[in-house]
Length: 386
Ligand SMILES: *Cc1c(COP(=O)(O)O)cnc(C)c1O
Image (tube, rainbow, N blue to C red):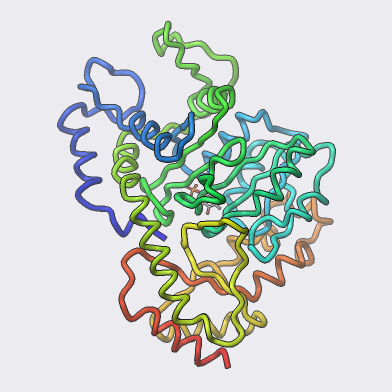
């Protein structure tokens, strides 16, 4: 889970520098007053370096990052965007906000996009696919990319949970056309609220940057108040306080991911011989962020029994099974375009995902894990998985 466990003096020092040297909380302008303090710009540059990507744009949230990515790709009314059934509502909200129609594909045993169902859902209106590395496990990019290429679809990677993971040596978020990150409080690194858009394509970056800033092109030969513009936009700008926290958190990212992987391995070691557990699949070459340890049991009743037994031991589960209504599209009756696109009734939509998610259990992984947690989890699960 989280960078928030490690928020401390490093973040405070970055913020303190703003108050000591500039007191400018806006990312643009005020150059004579800043004494060289540009936290959002520095954060973007440091992120570009760590992720090995040419262009980075800091924004106000992971949801904003998705919305900006769709705008950069020119997606709007009449277009269809495919994403997976298991994700946070934000992924689909961004598609709805863009005016496009969200089309939901099934997940497979990775609990990420099922490449075969992606193929089935493509038609002449499909413009893009948003692949989610859900709960930190990489999606099947080796199968998904060729399908997208064949049908000339843009690929957005929703890397909200995948920050710091990689797949066959490629950093998650930098594999498709655009990657989006979330720095909300529960994500691998946090700025309280915040997000990042990354791309290797200069044209996409320029469109994203303008859209997130009311259309501002930041024309270097013009003052900001006379700036040029070629399209309408919105305001998704990150502020300097968030940029400051992001700089400190980014330095801790590798430590967070390493600790999560180690703690995941310790829990796995403690439970792997229990009967009736099948781990979530991972594509070959995947190095996830170990945000959660996810496994399948025989049915939904057993998944709930696992959660109850874990709670008795003072350990929780994460999203699966208890928060499924925020993370499974088959429950989103409040999204009328989704309901309409699925024959007016979501209750029978996405049966494969429903079956898999219904019997999945996700154990949260933290950075600062108490030593007795693996044994507590083992005894809780051991009692129900007979
Ligand atoms: C958290 C999350 C988002 C949204 O990020 P916010 O920063 O909370 O707006 C988008 N997609 C997924 C899969 C998420 O988990």
